[in-house]
Length: 492
Image 1 (cartoon, rainbow, N blue to C red):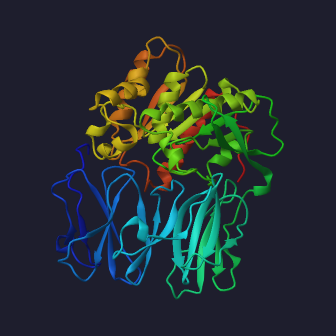
Image 2 (spheres, rainbow, N blue to C red):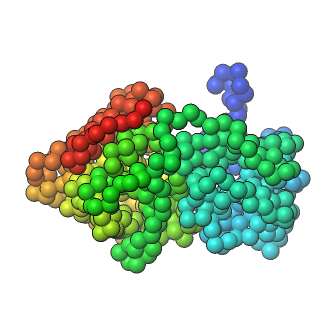
Image 3 (spheres, rainbow, N blue to C red):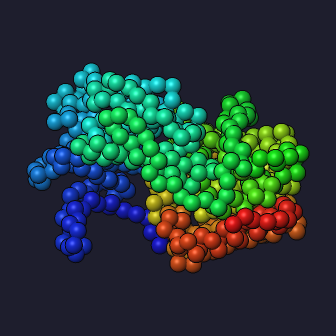
């Protein structure tokens, strides 16, 4: 479960047939570490191929589906930018691209005139990130992030007749996918207090109505949701969502759970967690900053937190903790930090750089050995984000923050619960094993430093509900005990 992934190949599989009958569509024997993905246009005419060397930047090609002997023709060459096909209009393509536009735009691309001067802008770049575009009912639906919350607009295929779709509130919306002939589409809206309500949208009348709402055993109006801004170490303004029960006294004595990710162009937007109610019902505060390295403000925001600028991400997270303490939301003895995968790296780096600032640390399935991560499974694909110790100049900055290599003997570290799983083939559990052993050896004091290893589980996706409940029970118990925050009650 730790060998490097090589020779990623695309096959066509017909439902109901055996896997060995699959037809090979594409392989590249000259690039064993290249990754590939495909999509098919709605009319079934074109196959779109995306080839990437890492987790950001890819080359886009196409060919007619029926001409199986034909080679793919490159539309957008190179691996520095990202251009994805939304739909085709005849033999032309609507494309979402970030070429020279870090907040993205939509263009009409004609393969007969592929040069940039032949591109026609359909939806221009704006100050807010255009995160995705879908089609349905012969319309375009553009999803923007405005301060990390969703804004949705409807357009005609030529970019005209822009119309904002009024959402139920500030949160995250997704959907608006359908066939060209569909008069009705559906979308999901969620927030920190809404588990996810489905809305029905009439394309012609531009009207929404509630289609499905889950039954709730709590009152969403009991909770406060807000967004604040704070300054990072270099003066950059960083937004942060805060959620807590109305009436909570902000006297600096509240248990606080600070969660973030900060990498790979991933955007953190409002979402619901049932287990989070345990925190909120017991006077706790949930804090989620949008750190650099993420995608909330476009490619420039992403690049400000990758490679040699990765320390910006840790500085942003540390500054979030300092803000929460200065504004009396919490204090160091009541503050926990949490993150998974790249977020596990975030927690590991911050607890080694500022062990005095946190009471509890939860590095989950984390990338914790930054000098050898690229040698296992798909780790080589992350080198475009982190850099690689194979390069001397990148080795130097990786070593400076690699959690495993920055533990110091005789240091009092926060109470720590490292979580991983024995079948994680994304971030191999050896990261967590080594970090746990080194932490227990270096740590001085009575704070517990534990590792929790789930069996017959992987990186997180697909974990059964029973395992999730068991893990969350352990995490919240560890959190409340080590912040000296007795649990009073939990509703429902």
